[in-house]
Image (cartoon, rainbow, N blue to C red; front, side, top):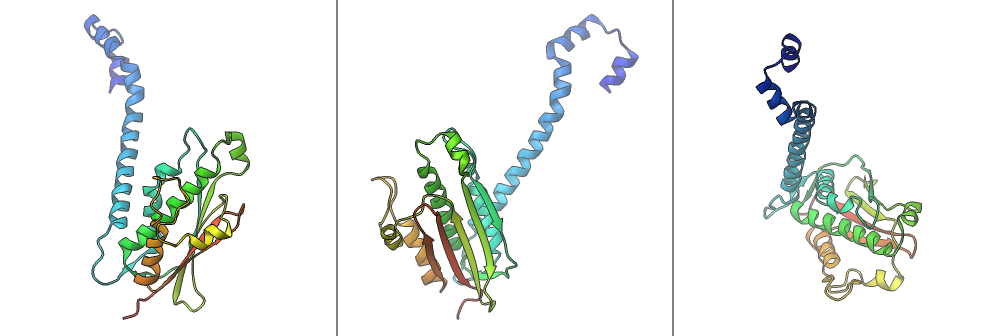
Length: 233
């Protein structure tokens, strides 16, 4: 419409010309579509966060419910997205997913999502702590990476969830203690040491599954969650 007016009435009244200059019409015409697109992207982002929070914090009943493991993992990653982004001290942490063909799993979804967020947050912490004092050039030589892989056991009775990082890894002494209550490698006041102990309790005692760790110094760490597809009565 503005193009048509300018074509049909190229000579404008001085007051109109003054107002066009005052509001910077050409800039507004260029910026407004970008602003609308940005608003649309923001609304979609809010929708994703809202959906993820609903999945993540769904209220458990007094019995297990049928749950999509991949939805739980993706909602957890979205909640932690701000921690994965590049910042002033390090580049972005890449997340690589390799999802198998899984059935819905009978579980306490809210508690299982707490396990996911604990293991992923620990992986991020390990990667961040491993590069303290390193330059960006040194970090780019071995980029940070978290890998998530899921698969169904050969007998179809268990789901396996692998969460691995390429961080510094653990000594045998540390690895032997990580599931102990109040054990932490963080400085005083930086952690309670309850995270992995609670995660293991949720997986083993609540779901009848297993949670264990494979790690060597310099080789990163991998946590494997084993969950039965169906809960025992």
